[in-house]
Amino acid sequence: MRRIPAHQRPHYSPVDRMAILQLRAAYGWSYEQTADTFLITPATIASWTRRVDEQGPDALLQLPEPVNRFPDVVRYAVQQLKVLCPSMGKVKIAQTLCRAGLHLGATTVGRILKESPAPKPKAAAKSGRVVTAKRPNHVFHIDLTAVPTGSGFWTTWFPFALPQSWPHAWWVALVIDHVSRRIIDVGVFKDHPSCREICTFLGRAIRRAGATPKYIICDKHGIFDCDAFRKWVHGKGIKPQRYGAVGKHGSIAMVERAIRTMTSEFSRRIVVSKRAKISEQSLCSL
Image 1: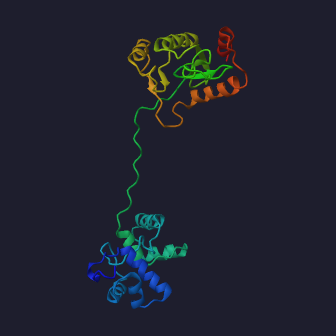
Image 2: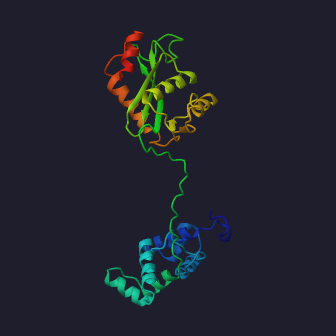
């Protein structure tokens, strides 16, 4: 770097220039010592020192943030005093704030008053997609889960190590009412249920509840996100199914919590038998 002429060397940024002058002041370096340390000329250091008081975005020396900048709450207080008491000048506002323990100069108050007030944050517009349950049997939640039997989800030999189905697991479907938190019906399947089986199970749940819901909330699984399920929902006079938001906690939290309770309090403490009739009766009696 020393072999490159001084005017051809890379230039320091305004923030770096201020940092160099701060180091010079902290260590008491002369112009020559500072210039030799950072490979610049003493005349450059002298020029920076003379221009240290410049302000604005075009200043030769800049700090990342002004050291005398007041927080936004102070600016808000000054602007509100002027709005509520228009007859107060900048000197009177500075004196009033001084009695309250906030020391501001009259010029600082004048500069704040010239600034445009910060815009008020706009209220978030309602998307109209939020479903609110107003009464029992108004909103139903549905979800699926796999409950292992005594042998667990897997075996050590292929191809039985892959599928989660009988005799290694049951597939359980839950339908819950949003307002009453009541489990309306439980469906048990030996294999992953199809859309036809889910529609049949939902029809049975509606008959058991004695009312047809206005909304059905589910996750965006292939069983629910298909034309056959949409046609069945439309035929029952139910609004188009609503999906839980991906990555959003709480969108289908109610049914997820019920499933967690079932798997922790029931299937992990009571070994589900591999006998089909006994296991199905036990799961349906939840």
